[in-house]
Image (spheres, rainbow, N blue to C red):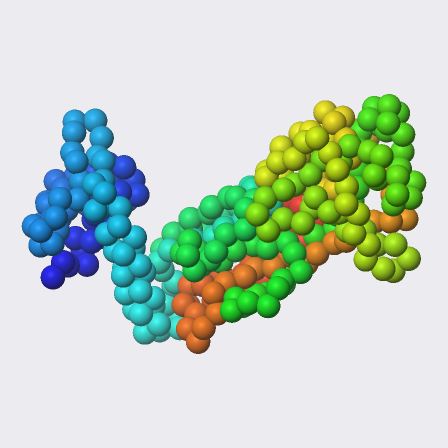
Amino acid sequence: MASLVNMAAFVAVVEQGSFSQAGRELRQSTAVISARVAKLEQQIGTRLLYRTTRQVVPTEEALVYFERCKSILKDVEDAEAALAPPDRNPRGSITISAPVAFGRRCLAPVISRFAEHHPELQFRLQLTDRLIDLVKDKVDLAIRMANLEDSTLKARMLSHDHRVMCATPEYLARAGTPRIPSDLLKHKCLLLRFPGSTQFQWQIIERGRLVTMPVKGNLDTDNGDVLTDWVLEGRGLAVKSVWEIIEHLNSGRLVRVMLEYPPDSHPIWAVFPGGPFLSPRLRIWIDHLVGAFKSWDPHHPERFG
């Protein structure tokens, strides 16, 4: 049977792309890492890595084995963490998924400061504007800005995502300023579109009711930063979170429109897989995250506390 230390060495080599990098990650020599992977290959009777002087390439079998090894090592890590005294410093890895702009601008600083005080924790921040499957993608926690549908996930609210409809003064001078919802149908609307997205059908509040507008435009993207670039270039109207564009609103590069008919805003959630067991490291991180965002102001998105 393959040993856990040899599995850990193999996983590190695949993740880091080299024996030397894996050695630095695990604080072991390159020779020790190489020997552990060779021992693992001998134990399971399968070649896992093609080695050259310049690179290490996993075999086809290795890619399947790699995912199973990661799952096994994480289960062992969680089991040991559950037995740890409550006052011991948390240790292990936490994988987080977040929207690109929010993760880079708002979440990354919180992670950095928390990690400084918990050096035995390893954070892996994955940035994507797509809706990921936490269980399938092996993510411990994800940030969602939406009204959550019923699911097996647990969630804790962090704040609210206040959104505005905006455009450049140049675009409005050229195309006119929309005043009522039906005016939106005459404009080029910049859309955030990906599987699961509904933003190509803007939802606005009209006299206290939620109204869906089937807006259209010739530009859509699955990346929020690209959407910001396009609206700043004067390509059309966009619905953006206040924290994303506050500096452009303050400078006058972007102008709010349709103030009487604001876009629907959503809570910002931290979601994580349900179940009876939550690792101590994830629990302490979630509690810290909720506390950090209690003082968060979308008009000053980099400030916490």
